[in-house]
Image (cartoon, rainbow over the protein chains, first blue to last red):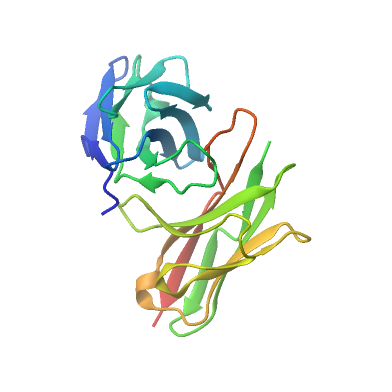
Length: 114
Length: 116
């Protein structure tokens, strides 16, 4: 158990819908990262927050948005869902926003868009 | 921009045999390198990391990796495979400076199969 929690574990929804994925970082970690894992794209970095502020952005679609709240939990919002958005979404946390610090991954949310 | 190439999407070994999973990186600045393992239906677990303190890095579960700058490699090894090592392994790179912060760039993964 990494100490990072993600809810829900599974999510099945229809095209065009909007969903929210939630992540709680390890106690004491200030940085939260979101990654998408799919068969065709592999593991892709989406976005990073540090202590409530956006730090880095990766291949995140405009239909996707995220935020980190004062209690440090984070939410990833996916809207106007398409079939291609079906993937595993991982949240990771780290004590720092610097590159040398390891990231601890949650168990993931499996999103299926039908 | 940094990148990672894992040579071999599937590696199969016998129990007790040497495990060698290959990773080559590309980076214009000194990298930080990581190996993660993913068991079925689980998240990623950190095996080990290289942050320039020592070129030979020891990790959990008997794994180790050696950073070779001249070869831009960071191969993962384990002297004797165990059935419980069967999983998918990911090599990842991050760099400091610029706007990268802690972003990890992953390789495509290598699925390790261990035969009895």
